[in-house]
Length: 218
View 1 (tube, one colour):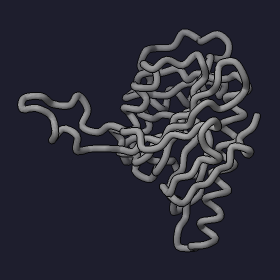
View 2 (cartoon, rainbow, N blue to C red):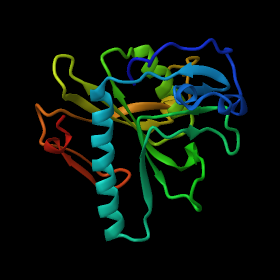
View 3 (spheres, one colour):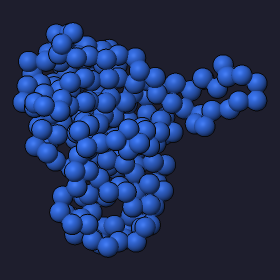
View 4 (cartoon, rainbow, N blue to C red):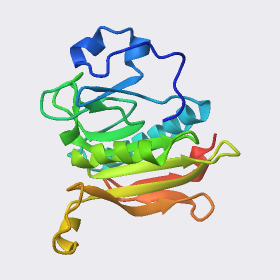
């Protein structure tokens, strides 16, 4: 996520998927619908796209290696693909920078949150924590098991940190009597990697992933 492209047209605060489809692609591609509410995506700079593509390439490589070792498993890795909430509705969706989902029965199907195993966002310096907390909460509410957050350095074109968050749904049981969580599901940090203290990103969910930092250079 980064800065928006060009001028935003004057649109209603809420739209349906059918209304969104009537917009020019260069406009519709900048919008998510959160329960029908128009939310503008942030885009560019070049580093954002580059690191998104580098991560996609490496995650795809890891997925293919694991599927070759175990043909019964099947995953797909994508960038900037809509993830729709619910079983059939299309006016409630987000567009992560990269994602991993189970293979779908047929080509050209919509990706539903129930099939998604991991979503990731590449944060540019212009992103705020408020932006990310709101989107992270939607991923958690949808039950997506893993969320990655990629932070870029401010002074040079490089990844500063990658953090992995796992979905946690039982924290409310540990709160004091009379205190209730605002959200029934949340993410907890489970791993974090930096080029300064590790040689690679290494994790075993949703399949064994090993990405050397040398493959993520701008």
